[in-house]
Image 1 (cartoon, one colour):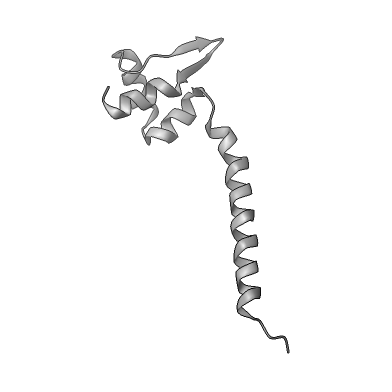
Image 2 (cartoon, rainbow, N blue to C red):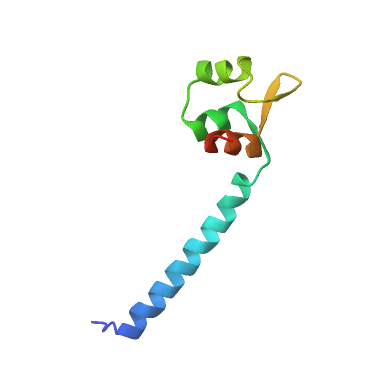
Length: 84
């Protein structure tokens, strides 16, 4: 039988928090992209492909087309969401 002390629990908590911080820092690198693809924008805004197309057509959401892929500026999306 092992006895767990308060110091053991505190150490476990510290290790767990450090582990979670590392995971979040690793995953946040992907979210710092300045240009997003259509699927990423739809997921970010929780909208359908048709709604995204309407935003493009109406000029509410500027985009760039490279080859056959649409790219959207993260900065402009955030400004649109803020209503600026």
